[in-house]
Amino acid sequence: MDVSLIVYYSLFKNTETLAAEISMQTGGELRELVPEQNYSFNYNTAVKEARNQISRGFCPRLISGNESTEEYRTIFIGSPNWFKTLAPPVLSFLRSHDFSGKTIVPFCTHGGGGIGQIEEVIVKECPGSVVLPGLAIAGAASPEEVEKWLRSIGRKD
Ligand SMILES: Cc1cc2nc3c(=O)[nH]c(=O)nc-3n(C[C@H](O)[C@H](O)[C@H](O)COP(=O)(O)O)c2cc1C
Image 1 (cartoon, rainbow, N blue to C red):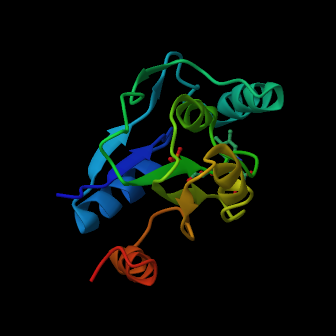
Image 2: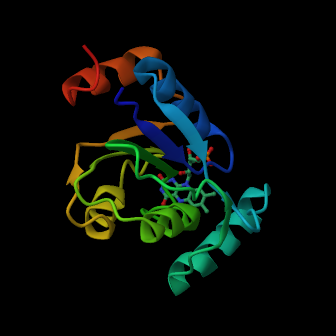
């Protein structure tokens, strides 16, 4: 059976909620990325920590979620939009695996900035893969929105 994988990082749970909805509608397996040191749950402190890591191109070590992806042909990859790009744990994941020959499906949640450069970064980090049009949600997604998108990319009948 061709089960897809839904990988995500989420600090404040918006992306986690979206990942869970995608999993429910596709039957895909959920996999959370957990960095060795998580970011502060204080928004302003998290902003400082994330800005510092992103500006250095830092890829944190993952203590969970970085297992093999070999058996999956389709991998959904979700991140909050952090300064228009991926959260560093997602970059760590992308740089740890070979996605050639696979189909990659980006999704993100954001605070008004949409998908930013997330799709471009994923295309760059996943050479040899097919990257489908992503979903960007401000805050919480409605099941209907997710369904419409999944149909538009041929991932739901
Ligand atoms: C460090 C940091 C940077 C952010 N940068 C942006 C941004 O550039 N554009 C934007 O629209 N939202 C930005 N946000 C808001 C988040 O993308 C938004 O709240 C998201 O839904 C959080 O996802 P989560 O609940 O899964 O952590 C930022 C939030 C944080 C904590």
